[in-house]
Amino acid sequence: MSDLGGFRGWPLWRQGIALIRRPYRRAHRQFRGLPPKPIRTVMDIGAHKGEFTDLALDYFQPAKVWMVEAIPDLAANLSSRYSNRPQCAVIHAAITAQSGDVTFRVNSHLASSSLLPVAPAAAECVGKKFEEERRITVPGLSLDDLFTERRIDSMDLMKVDIQGAERFLIQGGQQALRRVSILSMEVLFERLYEGCALFGELHAALIPLGFHLFGFHGWRRGPGGFLLYADAIFTRRSP
Image (cartoon, rainbow, N blue to C red; front, side):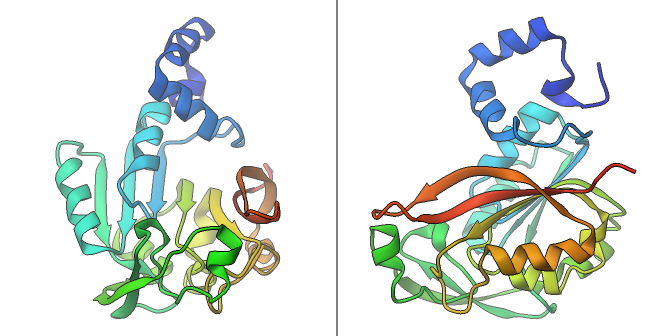
């Protein structure tokens, strides 16, 4: 097996057999655009129902996965679902600039829930209505504090899907992000949330931390054809 780990390190014949299975086809589509680096540790921030984690477990067979989820019911479900996976840890928290309890907005479209309020023009941009249903208080945790508490020295792959709150993650993760090899972050091109950062600001903030833009995955467009969001892949140049 090569040093790429998981699926990408398998012999070609085994990769071909695996791709016949639907879960592996989905995982291959998700991860084929990543830099060819070893993936042994994964952090899934905004884990939701564990969709990304499932793909990562199948594709990379990582030694350790951390899932971070703000919504209490979803976090509890993740803890129960992965209780038989010793390499998986679930953290109930919203990633914020500073640690401490925060107000979290649960929206009618659950996956759009955020620390930030939905922007008035969001429904028009997206082409469907989603609105705030309730507000809850959840633990807030900075990325730096999370790495310190969990004694994380390095992270091979970090996925971030936190609906407009990426600026807070960067502000509170100045040290932790320097330990991340590959960062997959959902970025916005339209202001779907009040006060959210768009791609240009996030890109500029990540450059001083040593990241370089590697590519994009999963483009989404609105009814008018304009770009709404995508997963931006950042990595570090090899020495």
